[in-house]
Amino acid sequence: MDIGKTTRFWERKYVSRVMRPEEAVRAIQPGQRVFIGSGAGVPLSLVQALTSIADEIHDAELLHILTLGMAPTAQKEMAGRFRHSTFFVGSNIREAVQTGHADYTPIFLSEIPDLFKSGAVPIDVALIKISPPDRHGFASYGVAVDIVKTATEAARHVIAEVNPNMPRTLGDSFIHLDEIDTIVFAEDAIPELPPPDQDEVSGRIGQYVASLVEDGATIQMGIGAIPDAALANLFGKKDLGIHTEMFSDGVIPLVKQGVITNAKKTLHRKKIVTSFVMGTRALYDFVDNNPMIEFRPSQYTNDPFLIAKNDKMTAINSALEVDLTGQVCADSIGHRFYSGIGGQVDFIRGAAKAPGGKPIIALPSTAKKDSISRVVVQLSDGAGVVTTRGDVHYVVTEYGIAYLHGKSIRNRALSLINIAHPKFRKELLEGAKSRGFLEAEELVITDTDAIYPLAWEKRVTIADGSELLLRPIKRSDEDLVKDLFYSQSDETRYYRFFTTRKFLPKTTLQYLVNIDYNDMMALCAVEARGALERIVGVARYYLNPHNRMAELGIAIHDDWQRKGLGKALLSHLIDAAKEKGVKGFTADVLADNVGMFKLLAALKIPVKTKIDAGVGHVEFSFEP
Image (tube, rainbow, N blue to C red; front, top):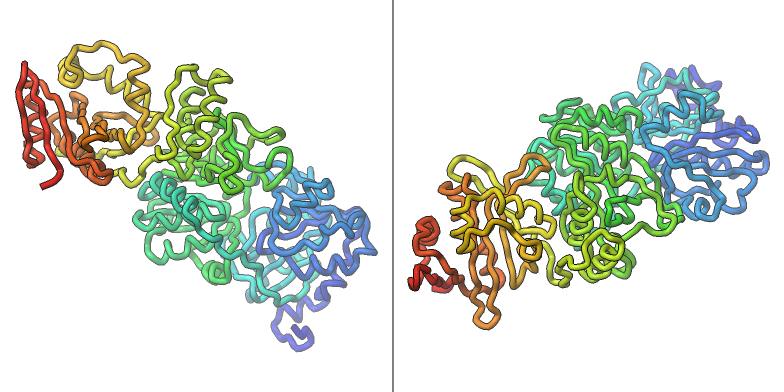
């Protein structure tokens, strides 16, 4: 850009502050602490200029969070001149951190700005990238407000790269040129982060995560294949909102299709609230001067108390591994730091306190081409806990959902083994037993085909207007099945078990919830109130592999009988059985069980019944 030919008022007014990058960075003195702008807002021309004067600088500390693009100042030849100090380890400085040539400070993203404001981490110089100013002299921090705004306000000297490619974002995202000591011009493209490739695993995780997102929920998501997959599965939802620390391109089609409206938000209604974005140029154009989107500093977006003001706040975060007690490691692989704490705990805790909130940890069940389980008996040596076992609620893998909050160590271990990769379940089971998490006699199916069939989940509305979820039984449903048994009347138990059974042995209970979803199938009807669930009915079958006929059993809680629930459950079970190649059902029904015979008649399927000694032997085929 030819400075001499500019005619806009602000360029004339501030011409004395305009320098070339190499001249501007000479303001940095040996031993000073220099803040560098975040993410896609990294001032590339200024960072590159630092290397040109490296021989003039010694012991400068470069402070930042995640930055996109190359980090030439992190190269080994820059040792002694610059030392990076980061609050989040990105790929461009990961090797330097892991070899001790750069520093990592673990801290919640919401608390970083206070370090600058309080002076605990003083900043001598801030290097930032901004949009061109408006006619009032205000420029926007653009794609990265996060900790940049507070760091800039705390810095003794501010050097700003004005770039016409930087979008002008709205909200608490502006700086006046009077607050800038030195201005440089640059026209390089804003660094882009292309959407990651989707695979089958992230797609399945996305389906499970999306199943937890309710209409009218406010969501927070990170960046990567799993958040993108979750977003891609939200097109059937209504009136979603966003309050997040960052988002990427996956949000754009949801806004355009009217899925994300922010109309139901209880904080900043009709607004997307974020602190930074990273993605493609299409994303940067989307946020440019868009009044729907408010950018705010991290101490605001990530404040757990503010997050909790969003009803149905649903936080979606990732992890590197989870142990069987529920401890979540998200910033290191063993003792090697890989990323950072970031905003995970801020949003996990905020969502947990929000009315109807759901904190979610999502991760693939394995790493390194299925050679390593991410669900582990204990965290790797040196691995740190980011989200504690007391904070964790939902954990999702491509094999299902485990709900851990308020659950015992035994139930946590069973739930997590159930969503681990099948090839590691036996190993995890033995590890849990050896540590006393489970009894030695504990029964858990480890069959590689025992994969929870999400497609068989179905919402139904029964005669009294109640909405229930019909879904397959999980191993973690043991307590819910036990509660169903003990809350039934003697008559209902008698019709189900042909005896007035007073208690349910543990071995029987384990058998009832260990389902392989092939030769054994059980569907339950669930009354849900937030994260609290109550099973009010179960229909199940056990396949005879010799004739492909299956033995049927069904039990409906007394309070839910004669409302059409039995018909809904049995119809859904028949559909599941047909999909698995079952030819028909058989059942033994007490002759005076009028309700069961009425249920079979309501299906309008020809039923063969033979009464013998007060018991009706029932058989019906699915084939014409």
